[in-house]
Each structure stands twice: as structure tokens, then as C-alpha cells.
Image (cartoon, rainbow, N blue to C red):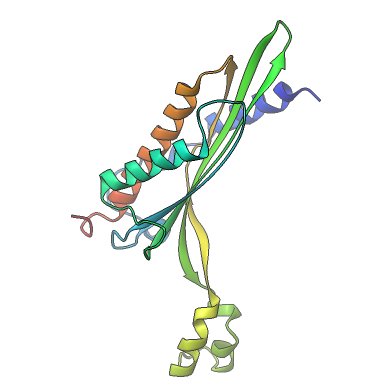
Length: 192
């Protein structure tokens, strides 16, 4: 199956998605749930699959993310506790097309994850019929897990003839900027 026939509809659909992150003003309850951490520090986790032999490597993307979060004053190194986790995933590949020109295809996604408590699955809480007791609070730690609460409103999807690392890196930088802007806006008042 021709890869171009699959990618073009995906790109068109992504462009039609409204820009949720561009809203300004007071935070909604959904935004508060998604991004509010009292401006707590954020860890970074990066996964890049690069089959295009480009310079957009996992290390380069991690450096971009760490530098941007450090500039914003919200970065937490992996060995330190954090209130959130920014996961950056990327897939980059190059496919030959007729005429001898390579076509580069990339998909970039940012997700913010928070530690959430699964109250309904906690058997201690269920045994207490919904009332927290001192015993159930200790048991609750088993039911706290990372869960995605925010995703970049528009995935970074694109394709072009040849190899243009600058376009892919620019997309990643723009998406990181969008995350930092939204994170700081929702945590406004808690950030210095």
C-alpha cells in the first residue's frame, strides 16, 4: 500500500483539529485538571524512532525539551521528584519516491502526565464504603499511577521531499513552546 495515500488524509485531519491551546484567560476546570501542579517541577521522557538518518535524535530532542523547561523554571531532573511528566514521542522515516527523491515523514506527539489516584480500584477504600481511613490511605499508594492529562492539540505531522531536519526540529520547538505557555498560564499565580 502506498504510504503517501495514508499520510495525506492524516495530515489533512490534523490540520482540521481546532487549536485548543490558544485560548487565553482564566483556566477552566478541565485545564486545571490537565495541567495544574502548583507550578511543580516536570520530568522529561523522550522516545524517538528515527529511520531517516537525520540529526533529530533522541538525545537532540531531549536536550531541546530539557533546555526549554529549564528556561521556564519548571524542569526536574529524573532523579528528583516531580509533579508531572512531559513525554515527547517522535517517529521519523524517509521513503524513496519515483524520481529518486526521498520523502521524509514525521509524527511528533507531546503528552503531559500526572500522578493520579484510582479510587475505584482501591480495595481498602471499597471496604470502607467510600470513607477514607488511616488504614486506607497507606494502601492507596498502590493505586497511584501516571496518566496522560494533556496532549498537544495538534500533532506534529508532516512530509516533504528530501531531508529537512530544521523543519522537524522547528515543529518540536513550537510544540514545546505551546506546552510551556499553557502550563505557565494554567499555573499562573503559583509560578514565580
